[in-house]
Length: 394
Image (cartoon, rainbow, N blue to C red; front, side):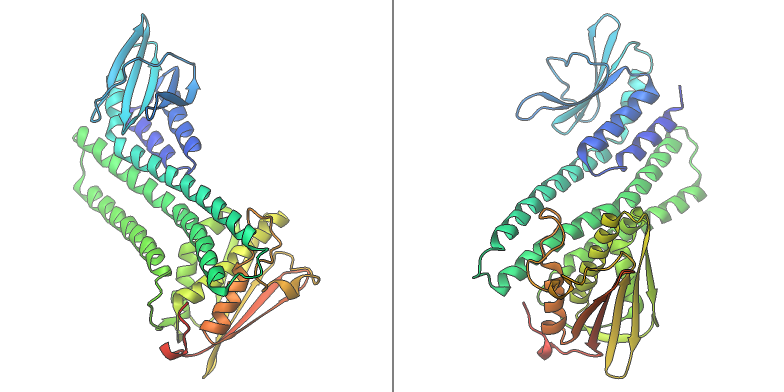
């Protein structure tokens, strides 16, 4: 039998490994069953009726009366030699079956200690599921609107915002996974040290500094998202380095997963005045398209390069990928509304249209594209300074 703290560490690690509810629950239950000697585990939903969502290992009978002890757990004897550990999580329950009564209370206390982490992760997974459903519904509405000639630019802009908002949520959820796991492991280790009267103040101080760093990162990420779509913004002076850092923060982890390298070239201290969030939206659209192209081409790995060059009156950005290029037969159409090379579930056809609209109408710049068999290059030229009078609030 492995040590209690090791079991807790494995279970807490499993909590943060997926934002898909069934995958997360399966990993947590499987980890607990594997390490505790339990013969099986279930996740039970009690609203509006009692039903088993997941069943891992051997099947067993669900007790007629489930525990209402939301701060602890209960042990049920269903028949001779079979004991059930019942841990309520909100209105739901984790239930595990044991052939022996040894250590059940220890395991119940252990899993109850990170009950809040389980509940938060379950709620996060359900929120992601709801968001995916909403995105599919919104995508369906966009496809229907494709065939209506009376569609106005205002409606298209609104739909584009909703589409990129869904993508941003997915990226933020991806970014949050590792910090949440780190915080969970640290807090669990501290609790274990306290229980074993082995608390080291120096180590605790370092752990708290790391927790503070992760919390700051989570807060900054959500602040970036909250500010992303605020309409009443003012132009601000930013550096190329700040722009690069924000793109890395939003896209980095997701791109690492797909083995896509983000490269930034240019003077990181060079400044210009613009509407940062609108420009970020343009780069997010382009780089997300490049990521999809890499995945579709099944290249295994790729590289996206953003280069900046400054003059007295303008700043030029080039975004280049090595994803294989855009066919010459369609490259002249990629800035058209609702034109997409992706299937209808993965593409709205508004990303590059909105990018061109933002650059040309709202940031008073220009955008063009070139492509060959090696990859695609977007070139954006912006004024070194834009004023509020120049800007079209949309």
